[in-house]
Image (cartoon, rainbow, N blue to C red; front, side):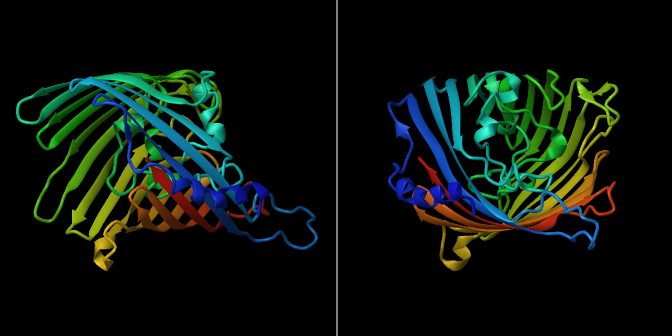
Length: 380
């Protein structure tokens, strides 16, 4: 266990002293935030090289790492129609994300390195800063327009049971669909129309740079339906996203655009059981790790065992490889979230991950194994 990991064992003493609610400085101005202290340990299984080949396999260390992000949000509403909003984030350490042998991050949170030089803009810690105007019309219908530094995941690819790395699943595959190549924390604008049970969202962004070092444009469209029936509430969404042509092809010789599309469902079945499903796909003219994603699972509400605020999440994901080094990936995750008081919760989390690789070295093995984690979260 790394020495830095022990720092996170003392964090509960600090978290339970945090205020229980957002700080409302006035009717128009409020501040809130979230702090999470997490430790994860990976146990990786791998076939060892045969005796005498003299070359050990790399990247399969069993170790424990921690991470502790904290985010603050400030909202100013001079009236019901106008809102000014900003969010900043800080973090200590990077958890297992940088040492894990798997392609998918074991924790989708923004950790220490993610918050520096965001999108190559030479901007640190400031995640979003935008202005929103909302026009209400008819019976509960709204049209909202936002502009500034935005995060596309605040507008599209939501899911009631699999969308929050602080209170739900930790693995990135259960937070958002990688097939959409969602842009975050950069300049853009969004339109949101809410009409009865329907919602239509469109947004556009300019992203400082991608992994190839190129500036590019991102856009997304989503149509959602939110029925409320005797069975329970549900959300059904179709999402379409794309980029400009600034992504290298598999040969690294020319630039292509990205295009992704898919469906996301979540549905309550009574008061205790809920289920979710994501299916998405992307074109592979550009270099992509995965071509399609299928994920789903269940949420069990604690009212079923007299712990009304607790819940259990169970999820499985299968990802079909794209045109890089991965043939397929599989992820299983289960967690139990226990609410300690009105602002603090602790989560026990277990993941099983396996990447099947397109091997160029006969001694190379597919990384597979378990990740065990604890996450203590305070919302204030």
